[in-house]
Length: 150
Image (tube, rainbow, N blue to C red; front, side, top):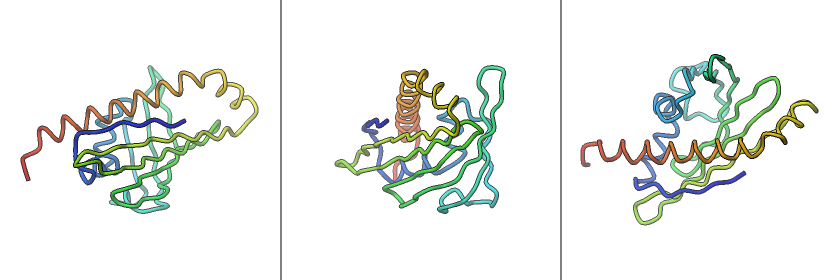
């Protein structure tokens, strides 16, 4: 699935908000923790991390791994559980000082049952992905407005 949005902030600023674990925790309310195996590895391709999310009363841990990172145009990572692997990619493009962000989700199901459940919940998953992108847009625009002028 693929979604696009224009964020009223410079591409470098938007990339920093994507690549910073502290910022990701802010605009993704469900995330409790993102911990890289090596400190300051958030912009290193192939770096591994654990992401802990709270969904209702449940906590879920995902094994994460950075994918392609080409600052400031591309930031991607994967999250894996027992049931699926999700690859999330953000492509950024400068559009007259604003940033167009294209978000792509690719889900690979690791069992037949997970594939069936994934098909049944595909509309919800798409809605959540779009909501996440909207949260990111709002976060960036608020943070940019609060930042001192450069």
